[in-house]
Amino acid sequence: MRCPHCEKSTLETFQVKGSGVRLDRCNGCSGVWYDSDELQQVMSVAEEKLHMLDKAHPSQRLCPLCLREMFVFDYPQTDVAVDMCGHCRGLWLDLHEAERIKTARKQWMQQQDAERSNSAKSPLTNILEAVFHSLDFLPAN
Ligand SMILES: [Zn+2]
Ligand SMILES: [Zn+2]
Image 1 (tube, rainbow, N blue to C red):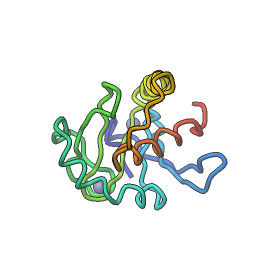
Image 2: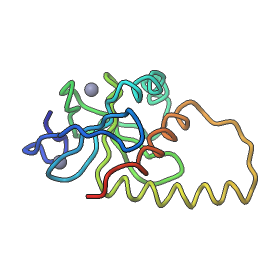
Image 3: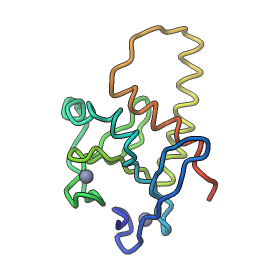
């Protein structure tokens, strides 16, 4: 697979530490492509939900699998724009995007704890929670 960011680089599969999840990472820019079966299962509702997001719009980047245009949208509770394929539901994160999401989400979670909010999470939030957790297991570059 080709990297949607660098285009010249290829993606290499690696196993996420402590889980059966396999992800693909670019050997050029260290961006990560999420297309594991496990993730696709939780992402089965993503396509519909994605269309409902106000800020989702067509991305310039092509899905490395389908070679179709992806959507770009702001990761919930952050201002980090991420790309997702509406067809295969894969998700692309640049290295700096993953780092920024980690930081922003940590701050947001602490805030939530402080407020003791019990508000129900949307399916899309749950999907992205799963993505967020997997970031902690990415091998150091
Ligand atoms: Zn790349
Ligand atoms: Zn795709």
